[in-house]
Length: 228
Ligand code: C5P
Image 1 (tube, rainbow, N blue to C red):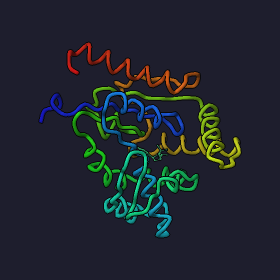
Image 2: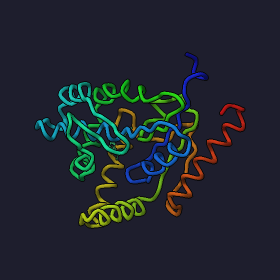
Image 3: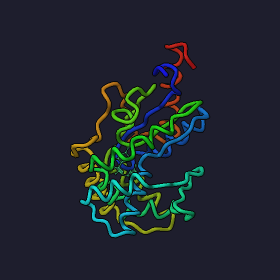
């Protein structure tokens, strides 16, 4: 199949808590596309590693976990061997470990085909750190979503409080900064905007405004190419 005839991909990359998950889901719903939350795969590897006492620097064992995972995605829920692990995946322990397991090239390659398999008609909205650079370099539209670390910590704080989980702003800000450093400085698929990505700074924008901006970019591109 030529790239032209493959289902279209909208790649949304960005740092932790930039709002890309919510935006990507809304864009997917608006376009009727499939949705890939690639971070959940790294989180699943981290959760499994915690459960099996596998160390964060044991790349071969982590890659083995990555290649044998059999998660079930159902709407926003994630299942693993019949258990609903959606909440467990969001814990701060799993979040921090996910960015540590994600530095290993063998883990990343073990997850590559699994991510590409999400590309199916009528199209895919994929969010993560390397959707536009590594996983879908031929994406139809690439968006790099940023926001200041303070704005991202405030958003994460609000989300946790709404869920009844107490959290300190200072701790959240420190965690976000640490994850930014790990994600941007690692050798394998570091977090960088693709050369052809559109950079959107959401610090002062609502989720609705960012979603509209991405949909407008998508429609402009379709209009310019004459392809829907
Ligand atoms: O996006 P999310 O916060 O759920 O991702 C969890 C961790 O997985 C990130 O901190 C990042 O280190 C890693 N990740 C990655 N590449 C992706 C998606 C996530 O390295 N495409």
